[in-house]
Image 1 (cartoon, rainbow, N blue to C red):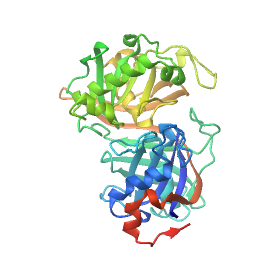
Image 2: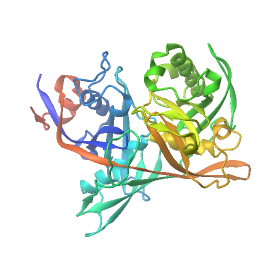
Image 3: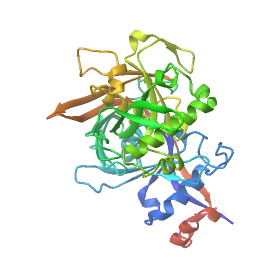
Amino acid sequence: MKQLKLPAVFMRGGTSNAIVFRQQDLPRDRAAWDEIFLAAIGSPDPYGRQLDGMGGGVSSVSKVCVVGPPTRPDADIDYTFAQVQVKKAEVDYSANCGNMSSAMGPFAVDEGIFKVGAGSKEAVVRIHNTNTKKIIQARFNMDEGLSEVDGDLAIPGVSGTGSPVRLEFLQPGGASTGKLLPTGNVSDVLDVPGVGKLTVSMVDAANATVFVRAADLGLTGIEMPDALEANTAIMQKLAAIRAQAAVAMGITKTAEEALKKGGTPFVGFIAGPQDAVTLTGDKLNENDIDLTARMLSNGQPHRALPLTVTLCTAVAARIEGSVVHAATRAVTDKNAPIRIAMPSGILTVAADVKLKDGQWHAEQGAFYRTQRRLFEGYVYVRASQVPRLVAATRGKLKAA
């Protein structure tokens, strides 16, 4: 059969890449979206490489974003994130991607979806993430009517420098479950089959995450992604911990359901500040670090950290009694940014967390990213793989 082509942009946001669609260029029937995203990205691919699509074989580059007009009065645009599984015919909408969030404001401005004043040197875009129902405020520089790309900000995991995008996640608590502390506790003991009893903290800020001490798994906290992925026993333990946490957090009804489903909750292990080496061989000094973290994303060790999970980690570090707080360097200024060491370097995140009437509240989290439009044009999909699209358009789309 022939191929169909859809207008699209390919963008980098932070340490992720994604195909970005304008909502108006997709079918109104969202049931048709999954097959389009799978075909465009190249999933499912049993070889794990996605060579027949735009994906790159790992979760950080197997993503799709959709941007359209706002459906809330306190937002300027709507943004929907889709995590496309690499080896499965599965698209997950349960969470947001913080890295790609940094590209959504610039995309909206450059596409004319959100208008800024003539001669403006800065844009501020209020983004409604439909996955989490949360508002993210993006602030970035403008250059002759378009989002600025060149700048001096370097971020771990991306070569070169770029113009900074400040992302402010407003009231990020309960993004996945409706509660900052889904179980009501700052820490819990999980009885995990094949692992035993473990003290964990389950926190939901920007993305739901379960944290465990590295030492409780016989790890140091500075293990590299390839070594973790090759350690079948550890990967199975982390999957089991995530599954039990999914039930405890109310995300799934059974551990078996969680094992079959990707996305939230994320699972990671943490340790205190310590000397380490990055993926590029750069040395990290423990004096420059407040916390060490490693995360799994859709069953794969992340080579950086998912940005929403980084925010969740910073929030957890401010919640007294959590395993993350216990591992974090003690500071006198509780408003100081937290420096989190991960495989690609150090991420600095600000988290405003307060205890009110005996309850913890995450007021805001903020960090900086860079972004760049990589190409624009059409993405091609096999007509045989998108029957709903064919039926919905009835030949209105351009064939190739």
